[in-house]
Length: 309
Length: 309
Image (cartoon, chains in turn yellow, orange):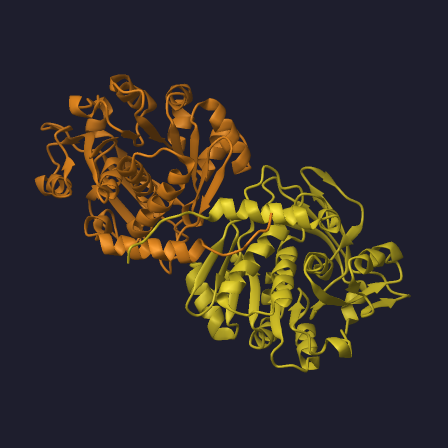
C-alpha cells in the first residue's frame, strides 16, 4: 500500500454555531486530514504534538482507523493546542475567540524513517518554517507534496510562506486567501500567479460553492454538494485535503484526469464533515455512504451534450 | 419551428465598470434574452415598448437576428426606459445611479395572436402585475412559462409577485433574492419553499459561481466558466434565461435531463455576455464559438468515477 504522511495540528476545539456549542472536542488540521484519508487504502501516519492533557481515547480513535500515531509526540508537562471560534449566522464567516498555541509553540516535527519516501505528503496548516523543516527531511523527489495554509501566515510570515510554496506540487487555499496572496480578484488570474510561485497544481476552495483545480493548461470545477443545513463547517477544508490526498496516494496516479477525481473525493468527504460537530461524522463514516454520495455528485454535475466537432 | 415569446424591457443602459464606461447603449431584459435565444432554431418575438428616441438601427439588430419586433410598441412622443449603474471593483455588486421608467410606466404588453400558443414564454423582469397580464393572454396550457424577477418587486409588490409566481413553471432568481423571498439561507431550503409557491422548476443563479436547477426530486449544478476578467456583468442573468429558454423551445423537451442541458446552454451564453459592454458580444456571436465554449464546459465539469453499486 502507498504511504501517506500528514503533518499538522492535533488539537482541542470549542465551536459555537447557530445550532449549538461544544466543550473542548477533538480538532486540528491533522485530525481532519487523517480521518478523511483513512477512508482510502493507504498506510498513513500523523506527525504532530499534543500535551499531557490529551485523552488516550482520542489517540485510540486514530489507531482504530489504522492511522500510525507513533509520531504524535506527547509532551507530558505541556498542554494541547486549543482553538475556539464562533460562526456567524450565514456559516460563511467566523470569529476566533481563543487561540492557545501551548505545545505547538516549540513543535519540531520529525518524520519517521519509514515515511520519508512516502508517496504523498500533506503539510497541514502550520507555521511555514515548520512546514519547510518537514520538506528538508523527505528523501524521495517523487513524493507529491500538498500544502495547505491560511491568511494568518500571509499577514505574519509572508516570506517564509513564499519559501515553502516554492517547494510544493499542490497548494490548497481558499478563494479569499488566493486573492490576498496574489492581489488578483479573478480566481483564474490568481491561480496563474500562484503557478509562477511554484506549485504545478492549485486547488482553490470556495466553501459552499465547491472547488476549482488548475494546472498550467486545464481547469476543473467541482460544486459543493447543496445541503439543506450545514451544522459545523470546522475542518471542511482539511477534510477536503485528506480525501484529495488519500485518493491520490491510493491510486498512485498524478495526472490531471486523476486529480479531477481526487477533487470529487475531497468534496465528497467535506460534505460529510459539516453534518456534525467536529470529527464525529468522519469517525463513523462507512464505505457505502461514500459510494452513495459520490453518486449524488455525479447526478449533480454530469450532463450529455454531444458536440459534432 | 417552435415559437418563443419574450416579454421584458428594451432600454438604454449606461454602465460604468472598472474597465471603462459607456454612453447610452442598447440594454433591457428582453434585448439580452432575445439575442441569446436567437442562437437557437426558434421563431421568437419580443413584446416590449420604446420611445420615439429609440434608434431604428437598434431595432434592426433584432430583425437581423430574425427576432419578430412587430410587438415592440414605439411611443413617438415618449422616451425609452433608461437605467444607469456603476459596478464595484469586485464586479459582484453595483449601485443604481439612474432609473427613468419613461414609457415603461404605462406599458400594457399585447401578445400577438400568432404567439399566444407559443411553446415557451419568458417573462423578463417587469412589474409582476404586468407579467400576470401577459399570462392572461396566453391560450395554450402547455406553454412553458419562465419567470425572471428581482428583489425590487419583493420589496415593493410582494403580493403581486406571489400571485404571478403561483402561475409559472420555472422561476429564475439569484441567490440573494431566493434567500430574501423565502427567509432561508440554505439554497436547498429556499428552493423547497419556492416549489410550494408554485414553480415546478427553480433555477438559482449564483453569478460567477454558476447556477443550480431544482425540481421536487433532483438538483443539478452548473459552474460559472472561470474567467480571467469580467468586463461587464450587465445582462448576464437575462442572457442565461435566453439561452435556457431558447434551447428548451428548440428541443421541445421538458424533462429534467433536458433542463440540465438548457442550464449549460444558458451558462454558456452568459459567459459570452460578460466579455464586452452591453449586448456587443451577443450580437456578433457565431455557432462555432458556442460549440467550443460548450466543449470548455464539458472539460470543466465532466469526470469519470465508476461506481459498482
